[in-house]
Length: 216
Image 1 (cartoon, rainbow, N blue to C red):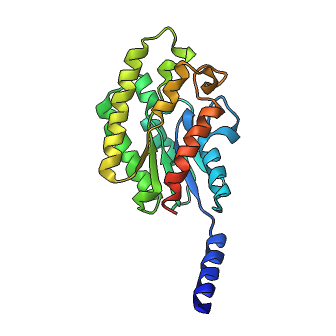
Image 2 (spheres, one colour):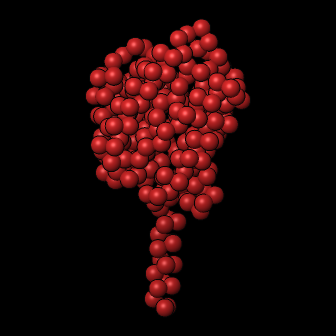
């Protein structure tokens, strides 16, 4: 019994000396455009994990508003990274859709990014979670646009990232449904009329945290 106790104490000490690291890759939805940085979903998720007793550092976020898949790739190349990370999330593609790029191009570039994400996690697929693309078509910003077409295109891009995620065996979180509730609840939209509010990001974080916790 004494040996078991000593082992558990040693394990706990080791864990506390090696805090969990989290890399978040994406675009405006990852940095939390139009809301305070403290309300971005990576920061909110880290806060939830801390409340669960996880010693996690501040997330390293590689994301810029407007980035497409190829621009995220270039951003990663220019960033200073310190892999392996214990947790990695990837959310990218809305600007590919917005700019009218093809789903075939998206598949190629998203697959390459997902491979990088897995490498950044030390090839631990269970430590990687892909988030689906939000539907900006329900926001006030899109009131004069074809909302059904936007939804159809978003669904097509999400079908790609979900298929690739399943193929590679990583986690997948569908948050698109959350964002579509904004059509009848404007409190889920930030003041810019386009991006999610902190209230919506908090829902993403609550759904994401348990998925990430499973790999720790």
